[in-house]
Amino acid sequence: MAERLGEMLVKKRIGLVYGGGDVGLMGVIAHVVVERGGEVIGVIPKALADKEVAYTALADLRVVDSMHERKALMAELSDAFIALPGGLGTLEEFFEVLTWAQLGIHTKPCGILNVGGYYDHLLTFLDRAVHQQFITSEHRSMVLVDDDPEGLLRKFEHYTPPKIDKAAWALGLKNS
Image (cartoon, rainbow, N blue to C red; front, side, top):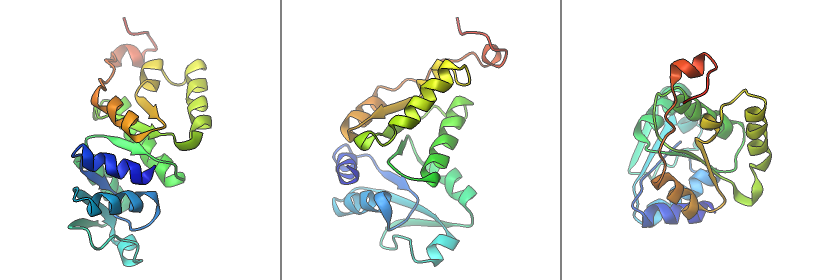
């Protein structure tokens, strides 16, 4: 699916902004996009670049001082965010940009590529948080999900961020 996502990005002329590594699923996507002539911007902290995990063949590899700088620059350069199956770093980065969307810092789509049901339990947790009123249904709707890259990108194309009355939300009132 990582290869397929890379192919879809190139086919749709969508550039890739990612963490600049030459390993893991994101490294696979970056290689596919580069090999097929697409645009890739890598952003990596110097400490990781020094450990030789950077994709040094990238035409645009930006080395920054910290993980905080990396995430801020990737968010600034990106028009949307996709979480593939991953670990703690993937979850942390996804929920940070999703929280920024919830707070109105950006209106960019945030999606999960739910390959093989990898995120099923996380999605169930989010639904439970809505049921228990820790997350509003409007905020939950900001998480776009598909098990196919093309389907997820199609959802991105049609995404409209929810209109949320922040004052009413802060007071616990429903949107009218």
